[in-house]
Length: 281
Image (cartoon, rainbow, N blue to C red; front, top):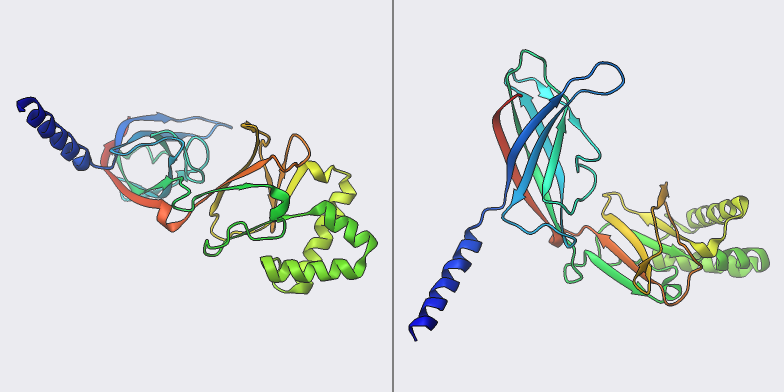
């Protein structure tokens, strides 16, 4: 009986400790590199997000960041890898890149916001589709505000365009009405005519490339991947205008599965951070 009570007390105590853990971005160290010539100078702040899990299903990115030196001069941020300002990382260690202040500065202050992104089907930030040919010309992001991602049947439309102009025009109207491709039917026709023409011009194998009409003004789509029997068949993507294109290793078959990661309001939590009077190295 005493052992059971002790276990219960320890369980409650440990649970309270976990609940009390603070989600916090902590500063681990600073490093400065001043270069002359081609390589830019930079000041790097190595930080770590504590109090939350960071892994494949819980990712982080820098949403906002501002920095000033002790003379109140604003400092310019460095974007891109390894500074996760435009992508999500699965590591809890975050490196912040800043262009160094003037040499008479002795410290800097930094504040910003980390986005904590939970990848989950329940939160609609993870979407999975099979039998992809059955999902042609529908908005795969239906229900996610302001987003459209429509898988286009390039081969089918190209054949229809070449052999049945009336049927092709009817299909365009259907695609516009059902999936919202283009601002109107004429706009949809101009778009589809161009993408079909482009693929015909370059002579590529349309069966080994997935083409999407993408309307994503807030960059909500994080990643689109194709799998077959647990093997990933995609390696990169290209985007231009309203088009998003993914090459795959083999022709599309019903066995392939599409995995989409997309930012939704429910899946994003914001964690503010601030480092005051960080002494320069």
